[in-house]
Image (tube, rainbow, N blue to C red; front, side, top):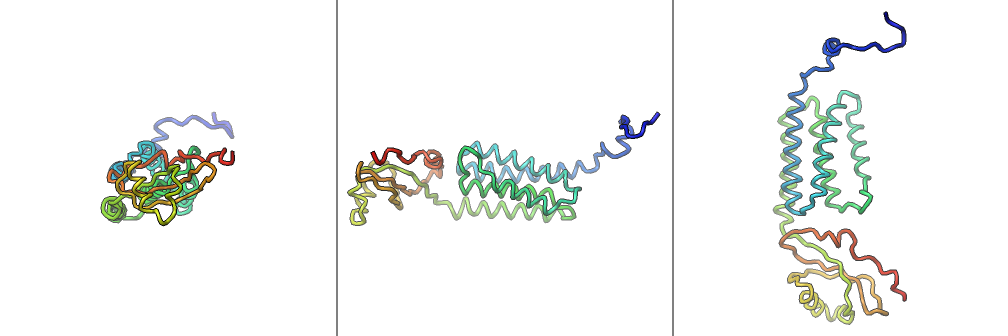
Amino acid sequence: MNITGMMLPVSSAEMADQGMFSFAGVPELLLRFGINLVVMLILVRWLYYSTTRRKDYLFTYILISSVVFLLCYLLESVSLQIGFALGLFAIFGIIRYRTNPMPIKEMTYLFLVIGISVINALTAGTSMTEIIFANLAVILITMGLEKVWLLRHISSKAIVYEKINLIVPEKYDELIADLQLRTGLSEIKKVEIGAINFLKDTCRMIIYYEDKGRSVNLADQNGFIKPDDNDDD
């Protein structure tokens, strides 16, 4: 007996007849997800991680890519398409992980991860050849930048320096020699002088040097050297 306005239980057979357990689209989903995962591993695990050794971002990028892909693919039937994709870019584009601001390179890779995931998911009516070409183009461009063009990696280090008599332009060579001796960095390319405290005879500076190991200085990147609140004491 049916009662108007009440939901009646639906049997498994009826659900199957309605297509709720249809496996027709599973092969395409697995194929697209596999392509997306392989591309992400190349971009994030090989190109990005081999340069920065940042496991926290490696974890973040792979999970964001998987979630964005599945979200876009499963909602593709809804008439969102371009507006939905742009909305994802807007949401993730304004994310500033609350501990520290994301560096520009990490933000670029985040944009790349989201973009590739959206391309691989929201390409209804596009041939697989075009999808593979788009992914290969992004991989080749990124590889060219990371492995060829930017092979010489310039890192920076923030320090507090006390020999302010050497910061004058006339003693620039002596300053470089002293910094190389005391820091052990043999290839200092440039020095930028920041705030100078004449009461304490110190100054803040950033030194730029060639890093053959292409490592990321997390202490400087996270603002390890904070302004001294007692500078005026």
